[in-house]
Image (cartoon, rainbow, N blue to C red; front, side, top):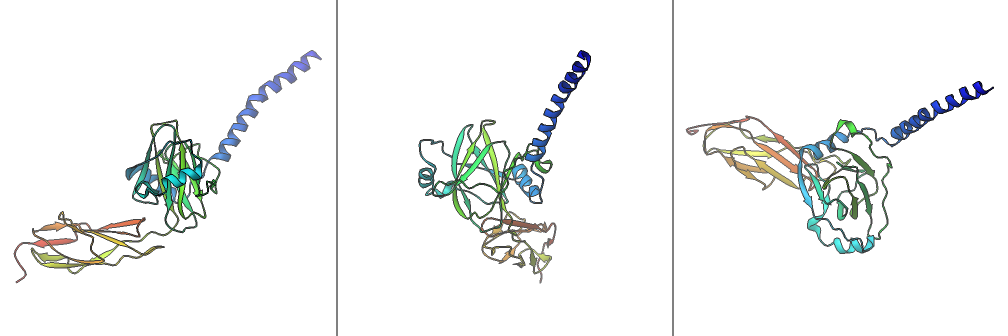
Length: 270
């Protein structure tokens, strides 16, 4: 009888760590965010794009609605939608700043490179929760710089954002939506010309969800222009040049390069 009791106890003792381990695995699986298509873009923004420092505030004595009212007028420090830069928030404690969602979209994605607490509030101080309550316990989509990713819907305009970060001296943040960005392309009146000849550059870019509002030309000879969708340019020196065009709807950008597409010869066309 005693032997059977000891055997039963040993089985129970052996099962305890197994059950605990299984519970941890279940929590891990439940709270892990599966990769989605936009994660590759978010990863690129966090890993490769320029970081812009954010002016944040650490005032905890005000309510969220009072903080919103005090920060909303400083538009220079707004964090916003961008596919060409991430945002760097300094501080190893609680930081507040304004986050701006300038386009209507089905979904907005906010990605962080630290496992930090992140919340947003509307002008009344009401919390706006994400669609996904899960966080990443592993690197999302193999991206070493993406630790957390939130998905929001029905966001438009300015909101108060709060980051609670004790794991590092700063947090990098990226914001994208699921709108189609513009697509850059252009033609040139001639691929071969002489020094001093005038060439006509014409954008054939396509708008995305929003109309193109800016054109930034680079002619490959240390000269550029942002005049309009068509520009004229002449080259002062012979050589082979790589022009490019960047188009933007104000927040989402696209750039096309045409390597070695223009050859300029010395002399003239006479």
